[in-house]
Length: 438
Length: 187
Image (cartoon, rainbow over all chains, first blue to last red; front, top):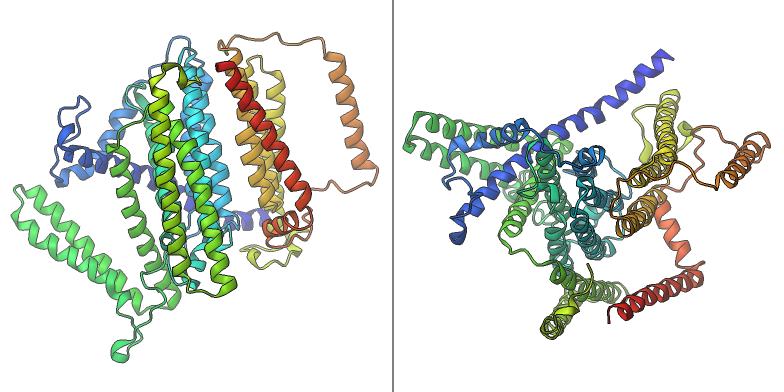
């Protein structure tokens, strides 16, 4: 019996270690997203005089320690509990939000060798777990036991509507792959020789739009108190951004696949392919840039920081280069992780940029966009993708041609819907009672 | 027993007894969670807390489905029951009774009906356990096809196509009816 328990503990070692690593690394990444967000906001010409003023723009080396400072500053403040608040729910809501976001992250394949939870319904798992996020929003309001509950209902309606848009948008990639397993969706992109963004661009953009609305978590908003609970709300929001970036990379950008994954070049008759040398060269270039920039820094601390960054790049370049000559499994694992992270971080940057510079819509307009524009559009996109698949598989047409035609047709539907929406919107806003709802 | 399953995606790091032990541990974890939150659900006086524990019970049940490798059922349980229907409960509570944290009376007059139902359910369980109608032993996983989601889908869209379409039309009619009623009220 004891032997069995020990064996089971041994088998659990790797998953548990993975979970601990994730629980440590994701908040860290979230902290750096905060840093990037401030940098982006600081670069906006019209945002310079905001009270919640972001940090000075120069990305100096000291800024890299800023996330730790932020977390301490938030966590050490006392939580402000509203007077008639329901204490249990007040604590429960942001914790649930953070836990759900981390759980959804666990199903994302960060590389061929790093499946935290390789479910064969990975996509469905993430959607199902994300659907629980509504409780964090819904309970955040009544816990304060005041008029916030109306606001919570609105937030919940927003979350549900855009959750539907996201699911319909992701379904287009699902149809192309024919599997719910995230690993097999990536494999399908390899087999079909292209990333699904080329076959279903409308699906990607609808998912992007839905996520921008969905990730907002009320307890992460400025003005919703301070302290540890607000830190959890921010963590939930940023972890959901990571889920977005991971899913978008997996479904639409080929996951851990190298660009031109099907193209094998064997120049110089060596087993090493030129495209596989790209990561190492990239890190080398970064190292050279750092090494040339280091002496020009003003203070000694900056010189040391930039210099050690360059050293780290040399090290990473060495790892990338060495894995080229290692066993194929090692090479696939290291390079897969590199490409996945590179694509996911690019997605993340774009997302943060849009999320924090795009103007906020009023609630009724937000709902109108969802129900009168995005949901019909994603449905049209599903039909278009389906027609393209049938044309390709039944008639054997060149795969790009039907996809292109269908994408143009879907874009036409989008223009038509948007035009109709604006006309209706103009008519309805003329009569103030037409807003309806809450 | 679970170790006898031969599906290729379960090339486990452990075999035989350990896998069974793990299965039992996971099962008891979710089972205890489900039972505890079910008890809490019926004993809380605050309706919102009751609703939260109802969701917790549904999530724990979904965990048991996952342990039984019914992944599709797991996802449906979370998406539909925990993420959909229970949300409607909370919506209804919050829309009808905005002072949600006011305690409700601890019991009502339906006590005897409840007792009758409880006895009936207990008798049913006893019959299932002792009447050899099926086995209730822990972690007996039947041979599942590796891709049971695909199996559900192909069955649903071939053999059960007509019932599926009829259900869809029914739901559409219900949705349109609800929208119509709201529209009539606001006009």
